[in-house]
Amino acid sequence: MIVTREDVNATNAILKVQISPADYQPKLKATLEKHRKTIKMPGFRPGNVPMSLIEKQHGRSALAEVLNKLVNDSLYSFISENKIEVLGNPIPTENDHVKGDFSKPTDFEFHYEIGLTPEVNIQLSDKSKYEYVKVKVDDALVSKQIEDLRRRYGKLIGADVVSESDLVLAQFVELNNDESIKEGGILHSSTISVEFIEDAKVKKAIIGKKIGDKLVVTPASVSRGGKDTAAMLGIKEDELATICDKFQITINEIKRMELAELSQELFDRLFGPGAVTSEAQLKEKITSDLQNMFVNDSDRLLAKTIFEDLIEKTKMNLPDAFLKRWIRLSNEKPILPEQIEAEYDGYSKSLKWQLIQGSIFKTNGLTIENQEIIEFTKGLLISNFAQYGMPAPEDKELTETAMGLLAKKEEANRIVEMLADQKITQFFKSTVKLNEKEISYDAFIELAGKN
Image 1 (spheres, rainbow, N blue to C red):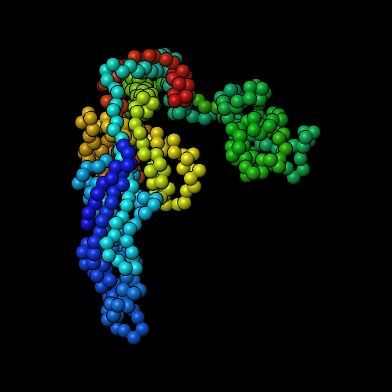
Image 2 (cartoon, rainbow, N blue to C red):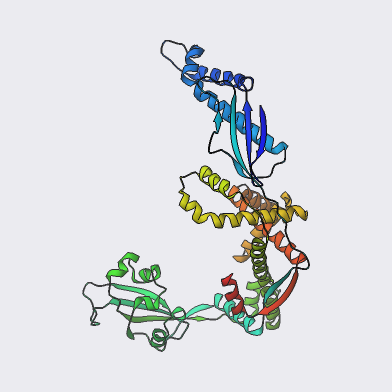
């Protein structure tokens, strides 16, 4: 077998595979013999069907099978031996893909197109300047976090009058447009969270009401719309269009969250026995935890900013036409050219980032070792346990759980990608010049939402 390369341009090349009878005849004979052992044909014992009949019935398909394997093996061996960096996989050329006669097989020549990985030159150094946005952890933010924790560990108690953060248990009765009770209409009991009512007028009307009070509301105004409204009324979402938008609610019960006391019992539940013993230590701990938590958010924002900047500034030519054909041919389900065109910009952007990331790793000696992946996975598991207030298991059990998770291909890919993102973010932080800027939590959330 002879494989030759013919460059079309800087991003595309043609690989030509020449195969002679001496290359395929021994494998073809072995394939036909294999068929002969299993084929049943009237008048012949198993394994004794004449080879001429086997060749007549299965020769063409067997030849195609043998040639296909030989071509694939030759292509990938050539690419590997010559260290050719390709995008996607080799695909048959659109015209004159095969030269040769399957009816009278002699010499064959197969033509395959490959997309070449472009050269990537990353312009990133200590002269590159980026803004590093941090959340200002002030007293107001710490106090809000403490209140949220007290609410989470608090308890519901009964109340007589509705306040702005209560849960109201009410009976919903469907009305007619004239606000009379609709005969055969909806009658359902549900809960209203006053805190999340967005309509200021409706919220004001409910606050101050007592058990037994009635008022008329639009269901959507005391819910989050769609499925939430339907669930509140005990109906299906597609039935919302068929009902009246006026309902009478009768307040049957009022529940109020009583915040947990700032006591040693709460401190121990939050952080473990004796870790925090006073309100001053609680504030210090909350401040530290928030700062550590927001570092990850700041890092993600920085990485995204640099990512967008590098995508824009790093010049590279992709074999676009080849990649579009490759996407179409490699897709398991048929895909229309229009769909490929519509999604290609997003695909090419993702591919460019992979190439940039790969170049950064290669140029700067960044690696991801197996043990690193295991330890990183164990860290993720420990964080998950902590999130649910559970202690992490012993190291042996933790390692076994991590290995089980990594045995799943999709999970393993996701974890390796997370680790790669973490490594490249740390590279960014240690390489570029960071101009730190503190902003409020609300401003940070708004900025993160835009990015």
